[in-house]
Image (tube, rainbow, N blue to C red; front, top):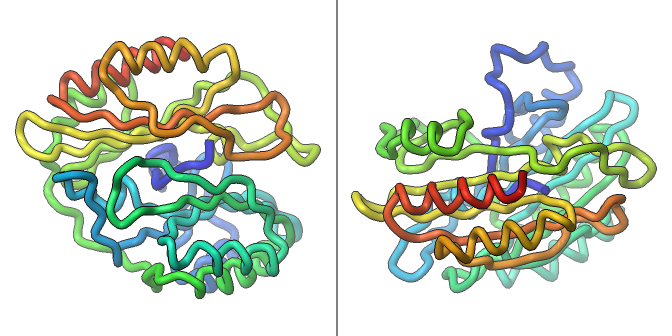
Length: 285
């Protein structure tokens, strides 16, 4: 539901309406560019300071360490939801500061199993004016070592077979270096929270990230955001293809109907990993 490091759900910037000046102000405060997405504005907070490994696999930052914040609303009234990636030493100070800054903690959990250093993902929600929310969140981020300002990096050449990934999964996404990223919408109908309908791309998306480790081996992670009747079919499809479920939980508290998030880890030949993910997507549909 809340995305763990993915802007692939966003339409290309050229297809967006110009951003209101307030969103640039938010970006200035958070020290990261405003990225127009589908119904909201996204601010990426990647943990480029961390070198994360899972077993003998070095994980690309977009795969597993991409914190973010998404704003929706107007210059007078907005909401923010997001996902902070924190280390064990940062967790307590971050939780305490979020509460001091009047944010709700909507989820605190792992997305992976066995990564080093161990990462915890803190999902949060807040309401107010965009600038006020940004200033409060800036104070929270100061409790972490998240590198800021967030600057653009030179995109490495694409080495993953995007035709295989995108064609097999039936969707376009984006690719950078060895990583391909896509997002899907598997929750049908409106989901309400705090008396309002959630922006689907902001709160209900299913992000998938696939990294080509080397020829003949790929790893994948992400989370399927689904309703209760979809959970068991997705779990069975993943198990049938050797994809490990690393977490099953919610990212919100009190939404209606409840949305469940199934985090996963796939490891094997690229074609096999992609087929497993496609099977799980078909099961959810």
